[in-house]
Length: 305
Image (cartoon, rainbow, N blue to C red; front, side, top):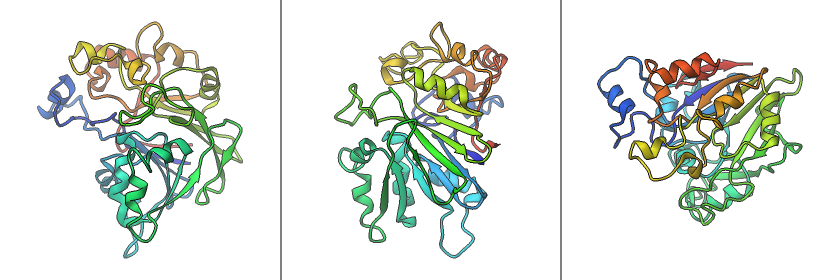
């Protein structure tokens, strides 16, 4: 399986248009230890020609432009054959509007996410005006034993795992999320058993998630914030990371301590907020993270298992 990181940042990207934090300022000033990052998205493929896209970030057109393997070779075509949504957040779904010329799209998501995208953020309804249909919805059931398959990846099966995080800010279920509002997805090779576990949002470490993390060969998970109070200390927000649905990396209950207990997977962070000090490779936080054998994904990173 080929895995391509299209975007590695959390919402807003790096630099964020209205942010002058250490990282955004440093990038604008040309600091070589800070990379440009677009909002999080990955794509996977069995044959390198037909791709399954995870989430459609607002930066999707830039990401496609920067990814020659997604460029059309016929007069009109898209190499993106299916789209999986992990949630209905703006930074994971807005880019679907930018893909309207390629309609209809094969969309895989839970009924909860589909509901949001037909009501409170009605992208699906809007796209009905393009090419006679816009999208075809395939329901994902978040159950670790219920697989779903995607035709362009016949050698693989997919499993969705419900995550405790938060519903989008515009949702009627904000601060009271339902089981299918957020999922992680495992992609498994039927022949070799090799596994990718992708979870760009993670609010609570439940036992079933820890078990799935331990089985993965590639673990691609959110690294949004370094500390729980990072946004408050920087005067960027009045909320803790855990209140926004994100487990911090550092601290007694941080993700680093959990990842240290996992021997099998290659551990790679994605969905990293522009305020996170690990995004400057000259910082002590970056060096501490790397010392634990944890990698930081970047736009254009290629992985193969």
